[in-house]
Amino acid sequence: MGSKMRNVLILLAVLIVSGGFMIFKSSQESKFIILSTTTSTQDSGLLDYLLPFFTKETGVEVRVVAAGTGKALQMGRDGQADVLLVHSKADEETFVKDGYGLVRYDVMYNDFILLGPKGSTDSASIKTLNDVNAAMKMIQEKQLTFVSRGDDSGTHKKELKLWTTDHLEGKWYVSAGKGMGDVLQMANEMEAFTLSDRATYLSMADKLSLEIVAEGDKSLLNYYGVIAVNPKLNEQIHAQEADQFVQWLLSEKTQKLIGAFGVETHGQPLFYPNAQ
Image 1: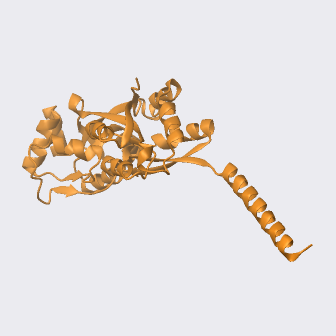
Image 2: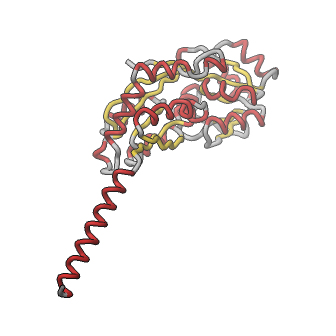
């Protein structure tokens, strides 16, 4: 056999082996999506509860990036996530309108609650108001220590709407720039007031000396939506798996799972399903 022919055969063998390896590797690669979401879905334990069901049923791994809603939406704009699960409806609708997301779907809701140091005189006074706006006004006027998320999250956006002024200055107002779980711990340590989603508070309540001082106002309802990111933003977006996740989240079976989460432990759901 001539040396030229041998080299050709060696090259063919290398190509066949390499090609076979690539095919084998591709078939073994795990499917996954990147879910960018708010910290409340993570800190409440909802995702740890739900996502194993999805992966078991579909074989698709969900890699979670939990941040404030503002950061989650920005990840979507940058094409760095496949799906968003967030809670700032107006911003979500703008996100879709601007072409960054495909469709926004309602998934679930809970509500925001105002918390204060358990058993304190100030907490007792605020409770008698039975009005969240009056409560926020009292906190501001008396300059009672308040820990804000300060992270452009859905909770932060809601808090800012509840104040009677945009000028939030002074040592009493602490902008944490952290997720809900961390902020609850800070408020607990500082004997301060804070605004929280109910789910995260209930999941941590036994470790906190904080109590609910204002709740129940319709303005405190907290709606969560799911959006698949527009695959035109990035060729690496896993559009098929993202749609699979969205449809799974909206399914009757998953909606029942959401409604059952927290009932056994807390005597009430942490989230109420509302997919149409």
